[in-house]
Image 1 (cartoon, helix red, strand yellow):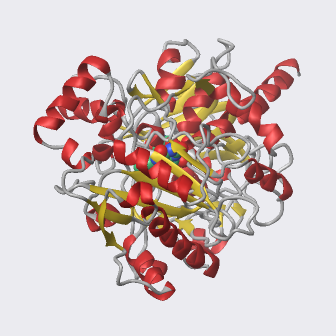
Image 2 (tube, helix red, strand yellow):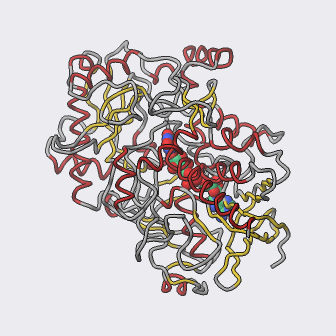
Length: 555
Ligand SMILES: Cc1cc2nc3c(=O)[nH]c(=O)nc-3n(C[C@H](O)[C@H](O)[C@H](O)COP(=O)(O)OP(=O)(O)OC[C@H]3O[C@@H](n4cnc5c(N)ncnc54)[C@H](O)[C@@H]3O)c2cc1C
């Protein structure tokens, strides 16, 4: 085929994975890469509206704004979810250079070593902890310095918070009193513990995948980045992917890939694009008038996400939480501090304290994570509309999530039109184990709050509220008041057998010249936030592809 643009590799999506790939694949100065991104540029611009959105991207606290900003966010809505009282959920996903890493909560967590060993046991040879660790290290610039678990010199900056907070310190003490060990590093060998989060922040500004991997190489002659370019389908000759059709500024265009097409559109879009391109369940595709190239019902299935609930506590009058710091004169002081020192409230992430613990003592490792913030917001607005609105009185929120849910949902096209969002069913809390762990997570919040170090700051429990004492009542609360922790994965699962969509080289099964490289290939959700693991996947995949480049150049 002859497209408008010719490249060796076409990458669809400039998110956490796509930015890594664009950088690594063009490093030789010769391999031609076309990077297509449906959203816009994240760098400063003359358009005032976009300028403000981009400012919010790069200022860590701007997270609260980009969560609901359609200029940089797809803002999907899931189907009404039977496990959450029929409530649909708003799913923010980044739609801009950097993808979801441009709007995420900036928390740096890798998960447990056992997660990756578990992938290997599922048949993903080459993806055990020892295999993936070098790629976490290659990505990382750890400001604390290098040690056995961490590295310096990589593009992704990992830093500590620039200031602590009295109530947050009390939370750490309380966790310790409750039996959760205080740890300096939650990304080491044993995850169980409590600590301040480490952040993907550099000099007080967001270090997204675009900042880390893309901005510095956009001048490479062999890298072409097209923004506002929505890929609508992969073009095949027989069963070989040879290009991509996309729309840009109202025009339909095509691009030719001499080597491969790589889908990096994330866990929602990559399966949608496969389905639009004829790879998916035959019945689903026929229902929507898409010609079936490969009948593979597993495409879009196996959807997993972390479900986050909120336990809120009213702090005693006079205690200072973020609720007061984010208003009036105190906020002005924080803005000044940020402008002149890049420190303070505006440089901080979506949560301050992380705790990992077990729902039952007999478990080998933690199955619960807590995102803890000395602030309270309207939970209904937060969970139903993704609006973060701080309350006036002082408060503390502990948000537990189960780390390795058993419930599975799916992504399925609703139309052959690529601009129509697919149907998303998260299926939260469908599995009995997930229900049990959710209840245990809420009970842990109470246990932590009751410890002397924290109890002296707490006036009363607002939610779930002391009246909700039984497991049934707590489960009902969990169903009615939680939502996404923004970690959908698994919809183009890596492995072998009928459940797999890609093989362990991330090649789409049943066709040639096509890979998926993003969070969707994780066979099981990892025990933590998913940005660093997705960057690791892309780092490793780049090496796999570069091996192939060497082979094909020699041939
Ligand atoms: C609000 C939020 C908070 C989060 N907080 C954290 C956190 O604190 N820590 C953490 O580790 N993880 C966090 N995550 C999760 C993490 O950011 C994601 O798992 C990770 O970024 C996923 O990377 P990806 O490459 O799979 O997809 P994405 O980064 O989402 O990238 C996909 C890209 O592809 C583009 N695209 C999609 N379809 C098309 C198309 N058809 N044509 C062209 N381009 C297309 C999108 O616009 C996007 O730029 C958060 C996510 C969100 C949304």
